[in-house]
Length: 396
Ligand SMILES: Cc1cc2nc3c(=O)[nH]c(=O)nc-3n(C[C@H](O)[C@H](O)[C@H](O)COP(=O)(O)OP(=O)(O)OC[C@H]3O[C@@H](n4cnc5c(N)ncnc54)[C@H](O)[C@@H]3O)c2cc1C
Image (cartoon, rainbow, N blue to C red):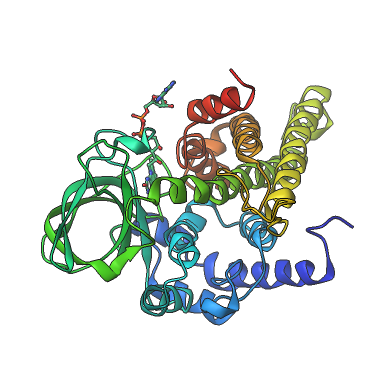
């Protein structure tokens, strides 16, 4: 029995599978066409206890830790869901953690509880039209005016930004590009804050993605998350959970595509024999399965270290910056993301090829995974940025 295979987590898998079968599969194709998932899905996911997994009950969550969130992600994809669905339904996984970490009761009551209850949708806006990899170079600025900030700038590629009731927004609180960052929670409907465009994409079709514009937007100072100018470190620390979620989506997508390909190769005959009887095909499937399994094992190993409770140093000092859950795993998280994304890229391509012409059709589930997978090496920090982190971790 592995750490993600306890009796409680098996129950969580069953709950997730039942949710996907009943609430997602009959509608996913429609949501892919309409470009978003309905609000009612958030309410249903909250009612069955899935939306709040990984969030403490004290802030309205269902309890559980990172490993429980991983179980939910794995099972959604294994049951026929998709990484796009996870991006749309669980955007709060990136929009809320900074607010919870800041322990601000006003913000927790106003935004966290309703979001985990399924009645509000949040988004996280860091990336700007001028660039996303260099977070310190953010140019959207907030200038103090009495008990408000006045925000000007633009954000782009923001997941759930079209539907979001609020956006946890990274702003510069000194001169543009200074790296002095703060996070402000900005409400939909605040004068000057508009969704400029709903962006059309290669994949993740059921997840809406927005371009946001801020023109003299007045945001109350009480909507600042944590102390001024401390958001850079907060953003970097929360990236670990986002990257592990994307890594999980990557190996889970790979494993689902292995399952789809195995089924297809058993059923499909060419030249009088099932594809699965050909040694070339069998070896290809074996290699796909091996890559998905190896990625899963490594991501689990890193996730377990991240999930360990905060350990203070012998002196009682807080862990050094970059540590997550007390464990300095920033480099390992970057490696886990790259390993899982590489496995996924290989497997989705091979799985589509094994499906032949059918793999290229909208009717084929593997076609959706092939398109959806491409973002996993871009979002939450690109493969190249992960390599930069790994190289630094090697002392280079
Ligand atoms: C569907 C989708 C959803 C997204 N959701 C969100 C969201 O909810 N919130 C949010 O804030 N952002 C979101 N993003 C943005 C995403 O995080 C960024 O696209 C990503 O971080 C890369 O930033 P960029 O696109 O500006 O690329 P750039 O930073 O311009 O990089 C372009 C290319 O150059 C490479 N590169 C950059 N710097 C270096 C270097 N030093 N050395 C070598 N290569 C380098 C990159 O790896 C990349 O290949 C989303 C993006 C997409 C497509």
